[in-house]
Image (cartoon, rainbow, N blue to C red; front, side, top):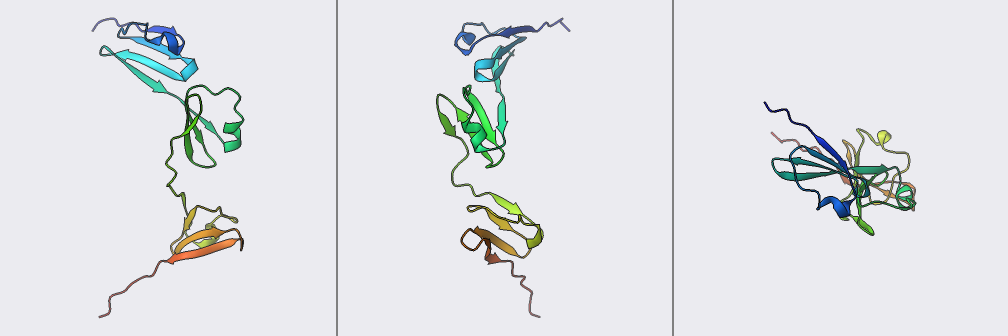
Length: 143
């Protein structure tokens, strides 16, 4: 087995293409939150994902770098590339499960489906309560 040595580099994305691919290179590219590895005569890039608690935290970030950002509050993945690009499709509906209605959050959110063993619910702001939109009928064979 050959004595392989890794070479570490730290550069900006604008200079990455000028660095020749050489097996064993590990390249840190902080302006695009990326680490590159040169293996099998190819360059593989790995990007990090920054996590925010709320959309407000994401929006208040003063100087985002190119890369991916996840918001825990909304379960939405964003990408920054000179502007915010929403990666998560808009037609996804978050679903929350509770074995019984008592296990659902005290106050729900519009646009979220809640389900229990008894049925499917949505949250109605105007009545400040859950509304059953489908029940879980149990069908039995008639013998």
